[in-house]
Image 1 (cartoon, rainbow, N blue to C red):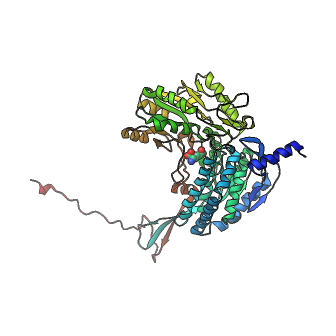
Image 2 (tube, helix red, strand yellow):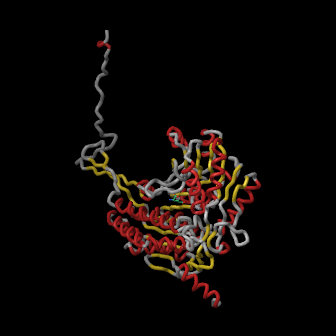
Length: 538
Ligand code: UN1
């Protein structure tokens, strides 16, 4: 199709403003495959800027990815773990060198502020440096045997071909949490990247290549959920040995069913409705800005974003006034044109639809809207906006009150810049509210009382908890994951993730010159006659 001269000049302008268009391809067996059935990835902050075009994987490319990951596994699993760690160390160096450029690609594609994108790349760098040395520490144990001349030991073995399916909100950090430890452990990877962030995924794949990962160890394919479903069928065929997924609870359940039938344990990192308790003794000078970041940072598009702020009734009014005051300073817009923007657009139109719907049903079920006017447009302006609101899915920060535990507003994850103020009568009531939803990902409390900190830690149903800090912002070497509807108990990051990408292999070596049987030929010894202390007394 020929583009008109005005489209051409717009493209040229955008190129100067944002960067060139990427002609993308799947990354399979170390090669780019342009493929067919192309789709476009647009700059979420400005839809007139096309980041690039990418193919949607067809069966033949999926087959090729499975084949190359399978062939590479035979070589990679035999590569000594410290050598695999070295490749990860080189990856860290590449990521450090390219940190700025990679962050700009992330911001261009999904619209989070550059500071956050830099943080995201840093999270991948931290992960790479952490696992570089794990290659020299992929310890097993030596275990004493109950028989003489016999040795027992354990080894971590890789699982095989790992399928990673990731979301668009952390298109770099979260894939790094999966791909880096999986490859360190000797597995090979097929990564089905988010269709909202294919440019970021391709850039990441090329970093693995530069770092000297052998061909076929990391393969990336593009496409929507239907490509993910096709890939999942290889679990049933016994050709994919592990699935790691970050996304919605609904999709996580489906993946869990497929993997369960194949007797596999997937890693599922799912939704959240994360509570932030503000006790009456909270330091509000810290709690208010933290609650703002926790609720509205990344436009609320983190699975760790705060969903309910649970405030002690004695300070409810003060908190409400000060929170509303702080909200007024939130700057929204195109983060590539203004670095002071607090949050950018919603990543995709489907998030906008979901967000706008919640405004309707939230009011209907009785929530009181304290702030928030829906989609920001030229007709429906927002006071601190940078850029052209009509070119992206921008929404204003939203605040609800009069929300009760049974309401959808209290229970449902919205995945946008919206939060509820919920009044608690006392600490116990606050805890009841904090646990009164289906999820259990992150959680936080503000209090100066160390006894309440302890009670909170011991009773909150969540995989992660912050004390006097945000529900967001987990560090790269602590276990990440949730309980209840937020996951299946698997963890990402730190040493804990290794359990998700390895299986234990128990080995015994019998060096005796005769047959000896455990449990049967063991000389356990026996106790002597019972001692009686009767004579020692009276
Ligand atoms: C996610 O939203 O899926 O803890 C991951 C945080 C980030 C990671 C969030 N480091 O908020």
